[in-house]
Length: 282
Image 1 (cartoon, one colour):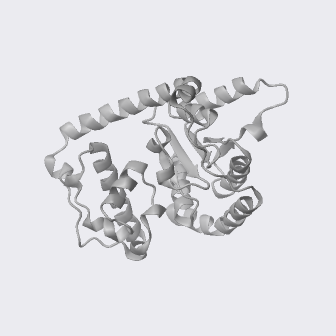
Image 2 (cartoon, rainbow, N blue to C red):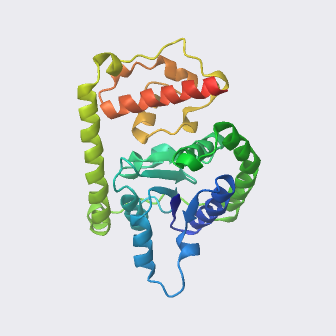
Image 3 (cartoon, helix red, strand yellow):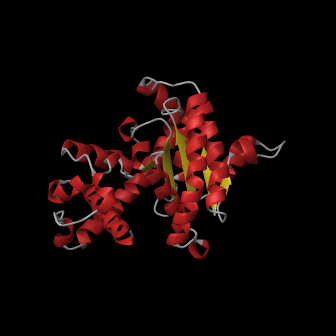
């Protein structure tokens, strides 16, 4: 499986190169593609990158404070998002928090550089390997073996690269002139997803959409973890915070009937299901 790793800026580049090597240690069936490593001399770099983007179904975007609104990052994310129902785009938050990310990147899966966050990223990629996927117990053991290597390398990168501030947004007119193509491509795919979600919501039983969290649900050791460790969209993260949901176990107190957005309602139910399954596995 090919995984395209997108970057822009020095800190982002170093994290991308770390992921490029480290992921191959954990998942040997994965073939990461990184522009700084894999473009042959004499090749037209833009043409080569475009070809790779068009043939890749998984992408990791190394997002930092410096490249948060970078047109090139938005272009590559938009290209990766083609056929959003089958492609997976992971936004790796190098030095950011989920609420720092605005649309359209806020619509994608966010990965925090924590032990749990990176493990969920690896699990998601592994699940897409089909017959080459590692069994759950094997991937857990392999991950525990290689996590210290990633953690050390990542901390060294943050320590050795200059601290960056979130750049102020440029005027909308100026930014739109540069990224209009990317935004249109992403918006088009997102509209298709929203239409699909609406069709699903019209066909499922009201009992499912009126799901209420069960106060008897147990999350085991994960219960005390902050919700920042979960892979949540910015919209769901902000909703939970507005409801004073700070830890995993607090999610039991959420009533999804208060959610007007069908897509967020489904996302919350998927999160609950995943947490329950993880607790059973442990």
